Length: 258
Image 1: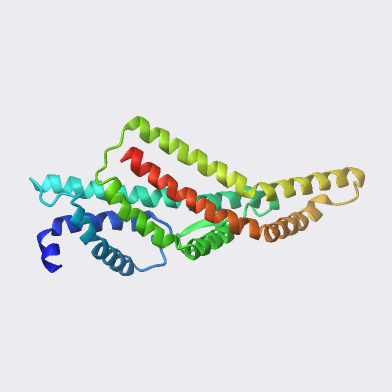
Image 2: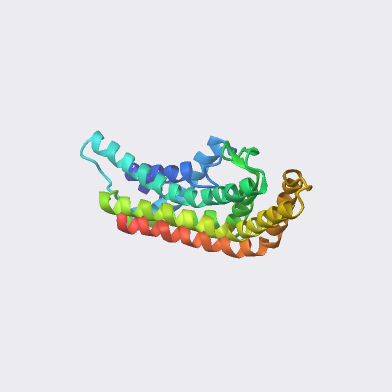
């Protein structure tokens, strides 16, 4: 085993670079809260675990004609790893985006909180949905499936060879699919909040002495939170399906673009 690592240490570095690239952009692995030493140690452990299989299949080069060729191979592997992580991260963005859809309707559009995991500001409901989705991602062995995906990528796409037309088409399809899923994800809450606004509008016309601006604020928040609680089972069933779509999109990019 040691002779294998010593004889093909350049190939091992390529494997490590792709894994580090995935860790730098993928959810769960790329959180700002985890120390960099822990991430590097995990990437190194994963690379050591899958390298013998990659070396036995001979999908990556062992020697290079020049340092420039090796540098190009390193950049190529880093890009592939970051693409895998980026696609998975985009599917986690939809939970924050969908939360912003109805946070504004609830009256919470101007209230943001700091997400210490990603070091960005997000809406309150988007943060709550992100926590739920991350817990379900761990519950369905999502991090393990991400490792399987990066291991499979060495067999499906050992080199980065995209075509501009296929790349543009796939990126457009990915973003449109994410927007569609995020909209469908919160359609029930948006529908209930729309009915709440309609009822408040009718009450304001039927009884002008009611201060709808004051009454509507707590009512919309209460209706939105109550609807969200009722839909927790719906989210629990839908979020794993979203993760399945995420892994299918990763396979699509690897097969058709790389």
